[in-house]
Length: 107
Image 1 (cartoon, rainbow, N blue to C red):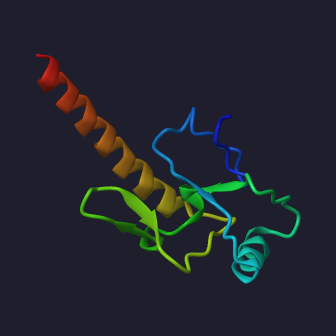
Image 2: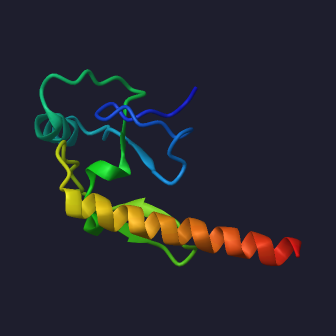
C-alpha cells in the first residue's frame, strides 16, 4: 500500500522526501485536525497528512537526524508559496548531498 496524503494526494512513491503522519488517536486532537483541514475530508484509521501541511517549527530533529512531529502540531490545508520554496530548496540540498556521498562511496 502506497502512503498518500488525504489532503493533496501526494504519495510517498512520487515524493520520497515527504513524511506522512497518521491522525491522532485522541478524539479531541483528531477533531481539531479535521476542523483545521476542512470538514469535507474523510478520515479513516489509515488516513495520513504529509509534511507539507505542517510548519517547519512543528518538527523536531533528534540526534539521529530523524524528523519527528512535535506533540500538539496542527496541520494546515493551505500552505504559503514561500514555505514551499524554502522546503523544496532544503530537499534539493539534502538530495544533492546524498548524491555526492553516494558518488564518493562508489568512486
